[in-house]
Length: 472
Ligand SMILES: Nc1nc2c(ncn2[C@@H]2O[C@H](COP(=O)(O)OP(=O)(O)OP(=O)(O)O)[C@@H](O)[C@H]2O)c(=O)[nH]1
Ligand SMILES: [Mg+2]
Image (cartoon, rainbow, N blue to C red; front, side, top):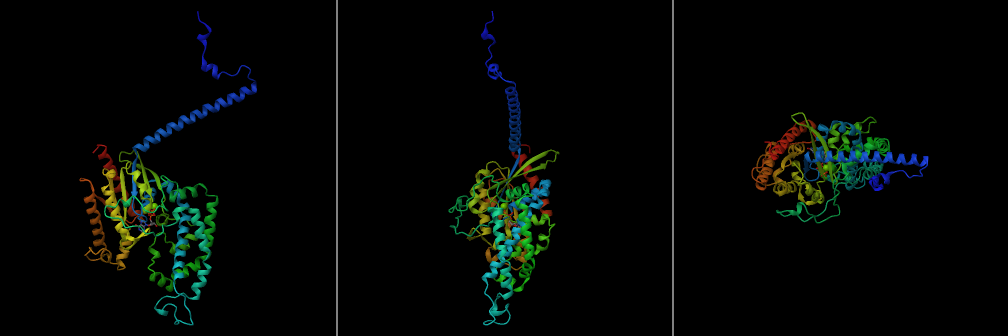
């Protein structure tokens, strides 16, 4: 015979409405229950999406882009974005304006700093021509009054720096001990005041672009407008100063080649301050904002069989104090793109002026080739900034002066081939046997030529990946 306890269901009892529930209380309770069901479904959907994302992440091709600061890493990733994420690229076009304006104002202020360092022409003491007096260039009254009129650009630069964040400040020169050949120094550092270990950060150009994009009608677009207006009102003075032979002579005497420096836009000022200005692909490639932290970029690439493949590219900060943040990524990547700015053979590292930039690049390359964690990773070398290399050689700058071992005629073909040979030699010396050496001569601000290189990179990485999983 059934007793009372046989029908006892603790769950039904727990969720049963209270026996003395009023109609109002019932409505409130039922609403709360419905909301709980909806939230539970939402959580299920989020978990499902997270699971799919995890699976996609696991199967994605992951590429780490490395090289010293200013080597062209972010510019290379911009090329990938232009080619493989066309909608985002188009949507973000206008947001580059702020960075381009900042680059322009910065160049003008660098030019003014150089002029402020030059002696001033004094008609009482010096010869009649300000250009030839004392055999050097002197500032005339007109330069001085223009410099005064351009003073507001200091404030504009300061405001834009605050607005754009840490990436708007280039690293200051610091003195480090020169690394030895065994150079663990590549990944450990003496000074930590500029360290950036904000892994997967939202700062740097990616973060800035996202921030500007999400608030098009807010403070950011006002910033564009106000800065454009200020620069427009200074346009005539900026152009006069830039084209003036005294200015050019002073810049030359201080070895400042602004026109070949990152983010040079003075020659484009008319276009840039126009109210309907839209940055071109070439403008965006030339825009400069230093990367801080490590940033992820996602792309969908077509496979030959018509299906899609996820690519994740990691853009990192190249300055020495940030290189330790690269190491955690070594374990998870399929490929590594290394940017070597071969035009930099006569330049010193900004953060450590005791070392030439190409020397730092060679050491970095050797360290990466010999790194055990990367031994099965496909390395691809971009011998970048070939346009600037060509220009320097045409100007008569001799490679031999900086690298006495170079004993050929100072032509682009000879120099470029010789640099490639050095990279290949270090690759063979430091890599595990059997690894193939892949290199490309690039100028990544040239989107058309780079587009062809990217196809070759894609196919090399996919082939390597298939070989790794045993499909080849
Ligand atoms: N002329 C020329 N300029 C280049 C080339 N590659 C990059 N640049 C410019 O050099 C500057 C630096 O390039 P980035 O891509 O920002 O350098 P990065 O390696 O990301 O530097 P960090 O973020 O500091 O590590 C930018 O203004 C680019 O437009 C090139 O092949 N030729
Ligand atoms: Mg960068």
